[in-house]
Length: 80
Image 1 (tube, rainbow, N blue to C red):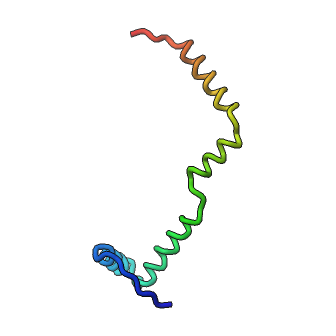
Image 2 (cartoon, rainbow, N blue to C red):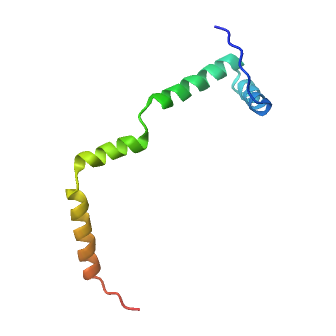
Image 3 (cartoon, rainbow, N blue to C red):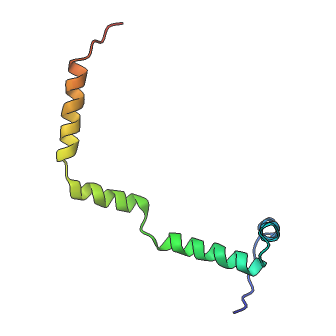
């Protein structure tokens, strides 16, 4: 399908140079770029995924690490 779009001149020139370097038609370069963008846009946000993982783990691991860190500090020699 043919589509007419407007893009900034600098972006067009950069895409044109890249298409020539890769030896692909500009339309193929634009198609690949759009496919990659859409693939990333469809994935859940990394922050949302990390938050979900941490929410499932609960607070037990955090408390254990805090207790361990405090114990290490208590047993450390803090002289100047």
